[in-house]
Image 1 (cartoon, rainbow, N blue to C red):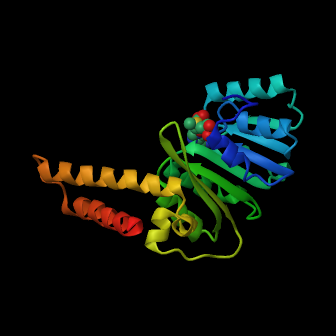
Image 2 (tube, rainbow, N blue to C red):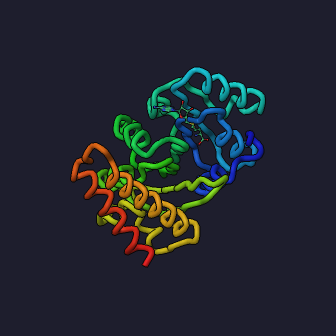
Image 3 (cartoon, rainbow, N blue to C red):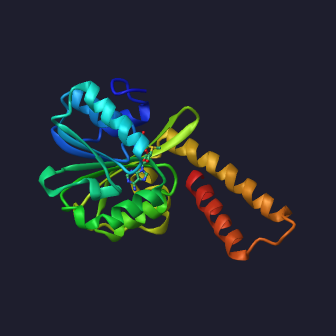
Length: 231
Ligand code: SAM
């Protein structure tokens, strides 16, 4: 992967960035996503935000070498602190981090959100608490996808403040749109998850120390939901 050839995961994220967007890519690492989109003429401006020095320097180098430094700002900042009002950001991508981390970045940076931005989120796990935050904060999920790359499953969630939405507990767990679409990758992901839940339950049953009952009940409930989904 580089700034010209994105991974399939980042290609699918790129496909959700509206044409001509002013993109803030938070946790940009090498800055491949904004640089690839700018090279293709798909966005008009970008901010690449990074909290850690080594990826920040890598993003600076990618942007400099691409000759895009006039239109892509690289900023060393925690979360949405990388965004300034004058940037006029219209889309924010947060990819390759845990869902809880993405949620915490959005929550602590709420003051930087105008409410007009499209959020393009690619959590690695923790999708349920992330969807819960979206619902609690007036976002509607407009697009979801599960994809499989190199034996890993990835989820992409796109949301906008397009009117409040109410999702039930199962929709928050599986994804409201994915539950309807039931793509082959989605079903394969949950078949794998069901095997893992059953494995966890049998470890609990054989554990030397008794496992707290609420923990067992929670995993058993998830296994039941998945079984019902796949039925
Ligand atoms: N977004 C890229 C992708 O999907 O390929 C890079 C993902 S990389 C695994 C996660 C990056 O997020 C790391 O470079 C990390 O330093 C950065 N990160 C984590 N927490 C952050 C925060 N609060 N603010 C900005 N960047 C953060």
